[in-house]
Image 1 (spheres, one colour):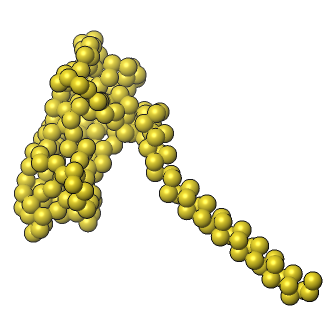
Image 2: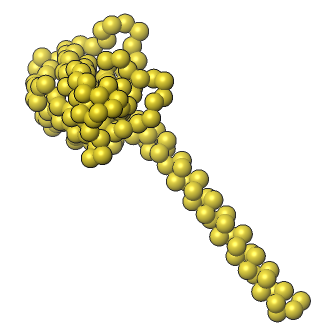
Image 3: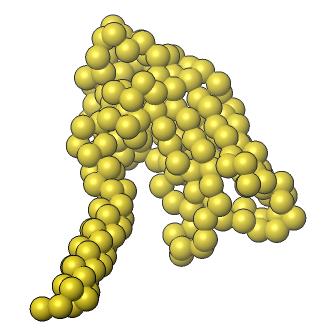
Length: 187
């Protein structure tokens, strides 16, 4: 085998190896989002709230009147999205197991109809699995006409298994523009 043939074989081997590495890295990056979501759902880490899948209107949850937890509400819209979002209640106090409803006022300040999706976050992160949402505007895309304002509810309770050292939770939403998916909420 000549030196040129050996170099070509070596180069081909490097190209195949590097191409395989690129494909594997792309696949790993593509799989990270669902893996992260699954990890957060299982562990409660990442500040994602629990979503209750209930058959009845009210869950069979005992209210713990011996504990109180402060819940703070915040919201923002992505810098490129001309929407305003604000909680109508900035802070409330709840007993674990007690169902509460808080409304957010969302306004599309653009001159065109837009579709948005709210992404929730809970702080501290370890409290995420203890905030159980029964109803939320974040479950679906929201369509707002130009200049439209709408109140959007969040119906939730705090699980009684919330660690005693956690006295305050912050529920925050960030709105991002999305493309229509056919699952748009009507309010």
